[in-house]
Image (cartoon, rainbow, N blue to C red; front, side):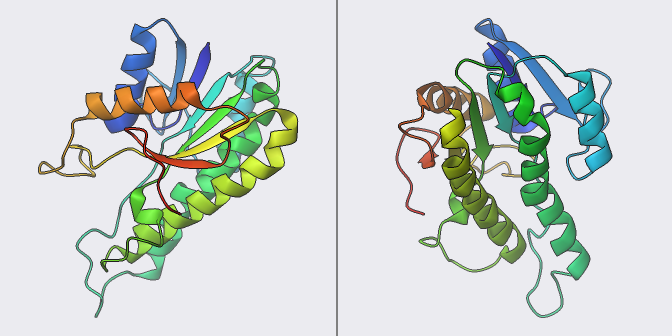
Length: 214
């Protein structure tokens, strides 16, 4: 299988790259600026066009939309959360996912069993509202909504879409006190993606296989 992972140079993306490569899949990883990965700035349409041209005629069996940012950790409600932070976060976490799917849709349609995995967060769920992190929560909720609607529109094309909470993971984003390491998160996510099918399209699941409320 040929799999493309955005944001594959660190964190969960890098762990997914390692896990999938180790079992024999062909993995194409992207990064903003890294010599070992395909160049992709997920917020830039021109960068998407360049990647699409580079991959023209190649089937992508699984697209993992992993690239994301968490810029508002620790922001203060009284004077934080500047508009520029909102714009950048949504550009990466939401628009970036859409542009990636849109630009690589022809490649997915060349696969016999195409799948899209969107890495969101349980912070996207309306059932979790402890306050704070307004930008990240809102952007991941938007990514969840995007994935659900893509699942509806792409089902007639045979493309399954799953949205996943990767766990609270010990990365630069998750912090040192998080519950699981990237290898454990990646193993769980690989299992979830392997199980994704047209029958389960539109699912929102945790890394360890639990259905998560929207």
